[in-house]
Structures are given as C-alpha cells and as structure tokens.
Image 1: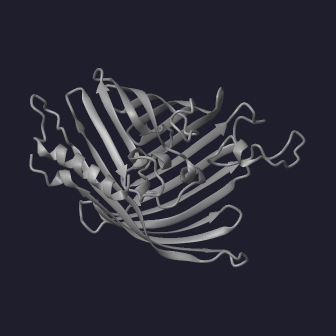
Image 2: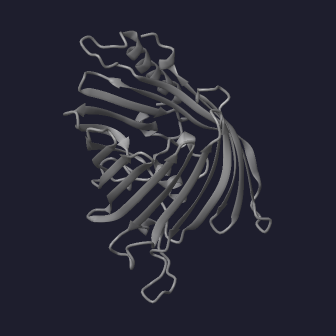
Image 3: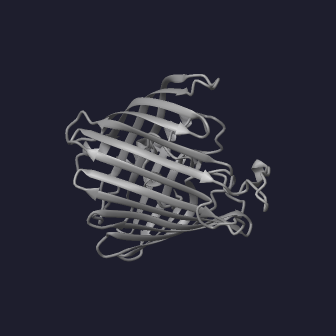
Length: 355
C-alpha cells in the first residue's frame, strides 16, 4: 500500500468516526475522545572530533507524522489507534507503520483485558515517553523494537494510582509474526505524591526455549515545577558470567519548568554490553552478528551521551505548539557533537468539536 492509499484509508476511518453522533445511543462514554494529528520539523547539525575523517552533517528534516484516535464502542469496550505515516519504503502492510491498534474490554472496575498491536511493555521513563518528545537518547532506545502483537491483562487499584499489567506478546526478536517466539512482560506503573514508578520484569524469547531477561526500574521525582528521573535496566541470560551489570543501561534526566512557557532540561546516559566479547580465559573473541543475544545493545557496546536544552511554548496554557533547541555530546568511541532546533505542532481536533 503506497502513501496515497494509506492517507485515504486513514481519512476514511476518521470520516466514519465523525459521520455519526460523537456519543453512541444509550452510552454515556464518547465514541471518539481522542483525535490528534502531530508532526515535528528539525534542523540538525552534527560534527565529530577533528581527528576523524567523518564529514560534518547538517540540514532540515521532518521527524514524525502521527495520527492518534481513541474512544469507546460501549461502556465496556474501548479502542486505541496511532498511525505513523511513512513513505513507501518496502513496508509489507499498513500495520508496519501502526504503533498500536488494540481493543480493551473492562471486565470490572479494576480488571481489563486488551488485544491487538500494543506497546511492548518495558519499564523506564525514556522508553515510555512519546518518541516525538525525545530529542537525544540511549543506544537501547534508539534500537529497541517497541510495538508488537499481543494480549494483556491489567489490574488497576481503586485509587487509580497503581496499574499492574501482564502482557503475552510476540517476541521483539521476530521479523515475522509466525516465528513462534514469545515474550512475557510484567509491568507496574505507580503514582504517589511526589514519586512515579515504571518497573518491569521481562522474559523475551530470542531462540526457541532461550530467553533474555530485562529488569527495568524507572523512578521519577516530581516537586512543583522541578522533576527528575533515573532509569536503570539490566539485561541478562544464563549464559553470562555475571547476571547483573554486564549488559545494562543507566539514564538520568532533570527538567525545570521555569514558567508556563519555558522548560529547561539536562539528560545523560550510559549503555554497555560486555557479554560475548571474551572467552573463559578473558581473551577477545569474535561473535558473528547473527549470534548476538542482545541485538539492541550489541556485544562490545560502550556508549555514553549527555546534553541540555530548552523548550518554549508560544501559546500560554496551550502545549500544542513547541519550539526546542539542544546541544548533546555522544560517544561510542568517537565524540559526536549534535546541535538541534525544531518545531513540534499538534492539532487536537477534539478541542474544536462541539458536543
């Protein structure tokens, strides 16, 4: 399906949703409660240490074009859908550009079950943030495959502050939905007075019967107009000499909301994978790419990054238009200096629909 046909299909969905009443008969929940279009436009400038022969890179680029739709079919059934509009670059189907499309059934006030294409449930605040809001990132974030077909069962406590989900999904090590590899993900979203958490334990099948384990702990402190988070992730298999801190990622970010229009932030992180790099005697060995266990932070990786930036929202009390700028340094053996400035805009159509 080419880009033109994708746009026609998405437009048809929106027209169908809007052609009837926003509210279904005998249903107090809106059939359509989210209808959002968003995009980001950046100027990038990247240069490297003078000792390298790598060229300086620079230019304007578009980062994202997203459409998000969500609502309710009945009091018990709800749906969520987000689509990235991508060029016709060999994608097999519309689903390849679909971040998520799933149906949720509320069994009771506390229990629900969902099925479809979903976010692959891994803990941490960098991973949880919408990609359009992430400016520079860890090696793990850059490489992880984060959307898969699956089903999930969710428990929410009466306060709504704790959400526990078990997800059974296709492994994100698969390149086809029929490879018979699966993942078992347990994630907890917690929200307290000044602390938010996103913790997960994941067992991901990389070959039949063999699993890589993730333990991801995201902790966020929120104090009035200041917030900071620390993500710690450990990745391990039984084939490692050390289960902890041979293959891991640590990320930290601080953000200060100066006023209604200005944010200032600083962020840094470190990824390392020392597995599959030496033999039992500590001698370097060569492992073919096809035999890598961790394919997202590959063996031999040692990568760090840090930077700071600012966001400006020209419309007071409205975050739909955002200007940003940042400067970051990345190092995977060579220093890369990255300057960026850009514009993000969102159109929340529900603001303009008269109910």
